[in-house]
Image (cartoon, rainbow, N blue to C red; front, top):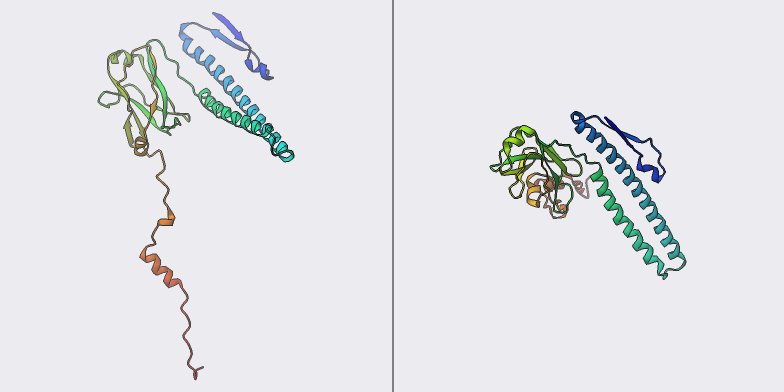
Length: 256
């Protein structure tokens, strides 16, 4: 048995935490021990990325305020355009950090040398998470592989399908596999080349869904109805007429 320790890197940005201890207890607990290490590292990574993001946004606000100050005194000053450009660069960097935070919050399952795993993201044509879908491993005929549980994607669109050791052994390295993406009762086959998955392998397979597949899965709202072009129904017109006040009858000259 051996014990290892390392200091939390957050101390570099002023956050002091006690060292993390990792205990090597042997092969029987290897998987859970590795999961504990991975969880600690990813948690620290998420916290650090979030703090860097906040610092970047604060810097962008300072640049914007300085640009406005200079513009009030000298509207033609060349520094204004430079400050605005620098602020936009920071906003682009913040977008990148947001993606990194999404990745850091993803938890990848650990697999042993006799298991197999297929992982990736399900996205639209703009590389955004497609939505709350389920990914199923199938054979070449589209039938789910027995013994392999479907995987639901997380908020970043990430999925991970773990193939148990006995299933990985029976599937073999030459069997052609595929993926089916479903949402409720709707399902589409992923447009991929045939997959192979041998025991002990971890394979990355991203799935990009075209607009037609998103429509089938009902993951996007239909086009907005243009209310300006809607023709009122006849009943609506009749109701409108009936709601008008009927003018009072004119009195005759001799009547009261």
